[in-house]
Amino acid sequence: MCRHIAYLGPPVALGDLLVSPPHALVRQSWEPRHQRNGTVNADGFGVGWYAEGDPAPGRYRRSGPVWGDETFADLARVVRSTALLAAVRDATWAGADGEAAAAPFAEGPLLFSHNGAVHGWPGSLAPLAGTLPPGALLSLAARSDSALIWAFVLHRITMGDDISRAVADTVLDIAAAAPGSRLNLLLTDGSAVVASAWGDSLWYLDKPGGRTVVASEPYDDDLYWREVPDRTLLAATRTDVLLTPLKEPTA
Image (cartoon, rainbow, N blue to C red; front, side):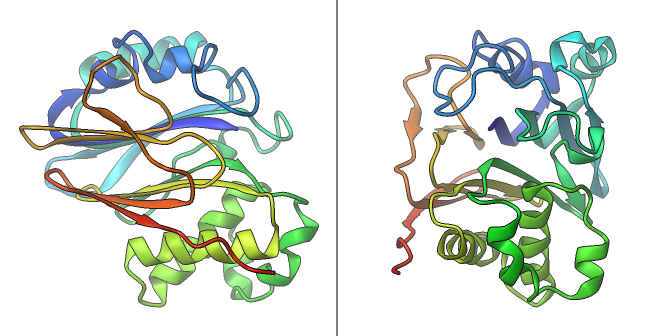
């Protein structure tokens, strides 16, 4: 499993979201409060953020635990952004593919993370993987279920789906192919955030002033935090959050 977070709003130092709060993502790497599977997220981490005037985000990813990375501490202190996505990783197979397997994955303006696991991986998704173009399979960022899920989402977007539909349909397809999977996906293009609650915790913070946070769990005890019901798609901007139920696939 993993913990992840996305932010949209006024410029903020990365550390003000990821380090300073009492239960920030860095602390969640060793002491999550709402994680349903696994206890320590020390198999890699990453953050992606957007700079003014550049639609493609920058990324910083590493294969080890976030708490031991001094460069990240400096980066989080000085870099400011109006949008970011960050994650800490608890790998199914620790060490596989190093930082290439650490979220966020990226393509153009998009940043993506997956919190969960595909049941029966990898065999359960073999038939579904066959629907992807060969180039998508050959260019997987890592040999992980998360990287393949990202390929499914990205393929749908390339074929014309908006980001909400791409996430929703990917979750439903994988849930049908591999029942029992945990599929909390998180995707942003820097102006909107789409996330799914499917098997693990998901929360959002929507405050006046155009500040929206979507995260696996709250980083503090602010009363504005709201939990997203399981089997739900969240679509958020800086000013609005929409929750839509996701229908469980039938056998």
